[in-house]
Structures are given as structure tokens and as C-alpha cells.
Image (tube, rainbow, N blue to C red; front, side):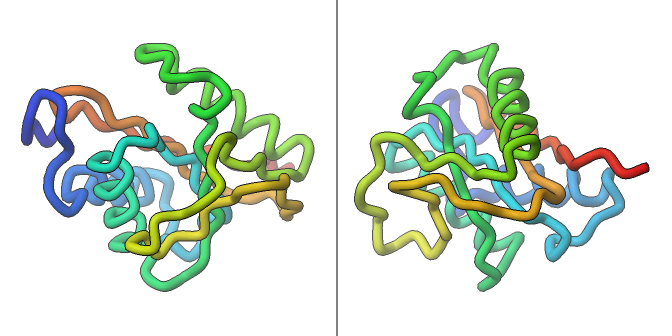
Length: 148
């Protein structure tokens, strides 16, 4: 938890950056191994800006497809992580990254590859899924296809 503010993210996405870095370390992966990012993506200026900055800090200039499913589900609060994990599993199963519903224009200040419009075909690989809650309760999990 970064506990910056009860509802606002830490400036520059510092807490989100550290959370994603810890998830990568726990999984024994490098940022270059990640093939998709399931963003917390609340469609609020402060949160989206902080998360975009965190993604850029972790992944650099590398173009990793970013999606948020909250345009379809709304914000289910405590159930968000479970729903988003299910969405990642479906994305892996179908080899499609869903578009970020309701998004038609990306803020030019964000230098991330947000999937909009149509689903994007992909070769499934490790996906990082973010959830950043009130009070700085942050969580990132990495989900990958099963390998025999």
C-alpha cells in the first residue's frame, strides 16, 4: 500500500509502479516478458494518468497492449480483481484482447497502447492485471497460459 491519500493515487504512479515491479519479481519475469496489461483503468483523470505513468515507468517505450474492462462491468469494487482475472483468462483462451469499451479517444499525454475499437488478436503470454484501491491498497497479479 502506498497510502498517499484515501482516494487519490500517488503522484506519478509511484505506488502502482512498485506494485507491478514486485509482481514481476515474484513471478521471476522481466517487463519484456509481459504481452498484455489489464489496467485498473477507472476512466478517471487522476487514476488513469497515474497508472499510465506507472506503465511507462515499468515498460518504457515498449508497446504493450493495455485494456480495461470497467467500461463493460462498471467498477465492481471488491469483485474487480476476480472479474478482471476471468477476463484475462478469456483473453488467453480466445487469443483476443478485448477493446476498452466506451473509449474512443486516448489522452495524448498517455504514451500507452490502449486497445480501442475492435478486439486485437494476440499470441497469449504473461499478462499483468492491476487493481489499485482506496487508501493505496494496490495489487498486481501475473497470469499466463499453462505450459506443459
